[in-house]
Length: 83
Image (cartoon, rainbow, N blue to C red; front, side):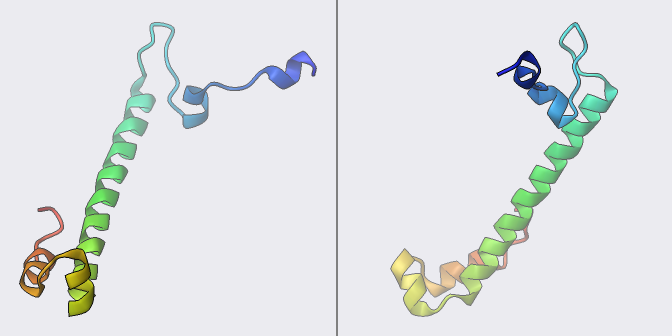
């Protein structure tokens, strides 16, 4: 294997989070971090909402299998996604 094949970019370079020599991120690195964090948070909220909607669609037998009553499933299913 030659030397050129062993040189790989770092994870920070691949993710767009360039670091300064002092180890701190610049403005663009912080912005990328904030946008990614926001996207993960929104994804988490949407996943929570999807799982609550699935509870509303389950049959009584399916709810019984997971140990949830129809009343509990309805109460959980109508909660807002941010709660």
